[in-house]
Image (cartoon, rainbow, N blue to C red; front, side):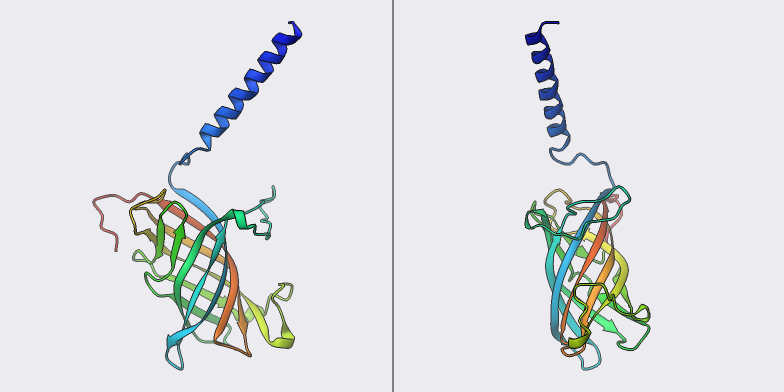
Length: 216
């Protein structure tokens, strides 16, 4: 085959491959349920409650993973251009505290709102409370960059799950329902217990509900 002919064939193949890949990644191409993995970086402070049960309001950006290794390990680096959502107005109450082996916490129904750039807003509950636990009995995460025993800042492992629903009827996840599960750390500041920070990698799974079934 003449050289020019070979170049044309290779060029045509590459262009077709690029167009095919671009088409595959344009818009919503995943079958339901839709699955997301988002790393949230949160900060919060006490904004109300009682002397025994303070209410923390938490906010923060959520990032898509930068890199996932073949064994499933996720790189912790978060890049600004990978931000896909923002957590706003999450109202968290705790039951128990140091030195309890397990500290339970709950997000007030409808208060944990995740805003996406395409217009969808996922809100907590959908009939299934968003609840978690801080596993104090495992001790602090001593290799966390936030571990600071001198200033009494202790990152404690957290885990939990709850329901979600999309409430605006717009965007890629319009009208969907689903669940969120999180694994991460909350940094408890013993010198300033009114402040809270942390991070959590969250898995979110969404689907379009049966139109004949009302969602709480």
